[in-house]
Amino acid sequence: MTRRDTPPLILSLAPPESYAPLARITLSRAGYSIISAERWAEMSQTPDNAPKLAIADLECEGIGIPPSTPWIALAPRNAPHPTRTPIVGLVERPAQFHALYRVLQLALEPTPRSSARVATSLAAHCRAKTGSWEAQVVSLSRDGCLLWREEPPPDGEVVTLDFDLPNFGRVEISGHTVYRRATETALVFRDVSAPEGRSIQRFVEEKLLTR
Image (cartoon, rainbow, N blue to C red; front, side):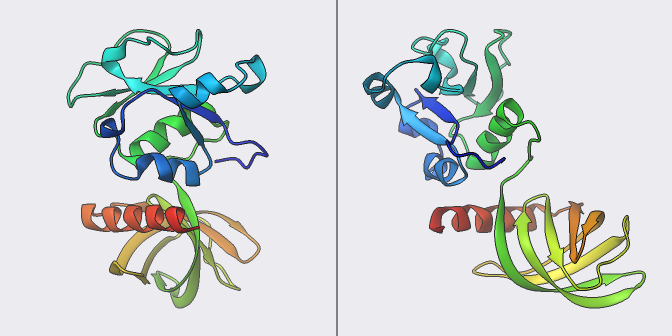
């Protein structure tokens, strides 16, 4: 998300069991200020500190949400998407961090990310048509990474890299370069297997929780 002096205020009206374990805490570490209804009632309810968005169970039908505040509905699996305008997204219960993060980004950020990104320092071996080389993964998300190397690969090249993901083992994944900036190259991953995607997502969430 875009860095701000004050994190966006998110009002949570959903009970703890509507969230996956640690999902709310991880959202807070990712840059969102998640507050309960009780905390909101204690705050000075002025336009300056009104919540940017609310999260609530679908069944509440918006009760308790400040007027004109958009909200994310947490719902049972396969629940139909309601047509009520203030609802900006439907997330299956118990709501996982990555699903909530994606909807929050789309609803609030001018340049949204599809998944959270964390800073890393991971040695990686890279292969492409032009040869192979060593590099360093300096940031990582479920959908891509930022590589550091003194001589980056050409724009648009397909790169396969493998690296050790602490606590999760070796990962081999392919992506294509989307931009270069000095010694840094951004890769967007493609055809990510389910196990590798889960490993990267869990790694990212653990990093968010410990920073």
